[in-house]
Image (cartoon, rainbow, N blue to C red):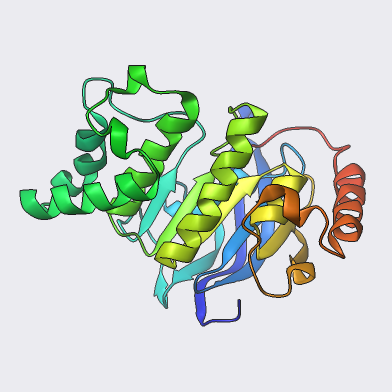
Length: 267
């Protein structure tokens, strides 16, 4: 996974005001690159600021210092080029799956026929074809997240951002969703940056893992999952037996243990 640089973050920092006129530095001097069609995972202990970094990439938070570029253009505000999938379910209860997936396109002025065709394409991609006319209350948690992913992809973002999107799911649904993401990556060529604190998830999905230190978060290690030989493993159980997996899992677990002793101040 060595394509052109898609996203570049250089010297990113973020401070938040607290009582008494003081500030807490959430992240400090965060720098990393994400390449075209790369699945980059931001991994680290709870409270290290990885979600804050993701929100700055999305344009939902302004950095206190440093700068970020997507395709050579500075990130200054939210933009349709960056699509976000959150941990919580964000479907509209009064709209069908079809209408939920079309919603963002409708706001962006996409003609009705094109909206319908694009929605159908991505509903099929996330394997919800039989449920296109169902309402969110009729869907499981995993299916609701598939709606969110389809809706985001239907807007054709240049970069897909995911903030612990499978964290609330049961174990079986979680690995099914992880495998679905591998399939989506292979089908669409989308570039993804995802936040997680789950080491197995990071190793299975990630082409690159950016490990964020405990608060104030900075890049402790920027590593590629070389044990996969530049390929993606489609089934969760298969990756567990790839030579080098256990060693990398052990090394990351050691990092997580060393960095997990700080106070949790920032998500």
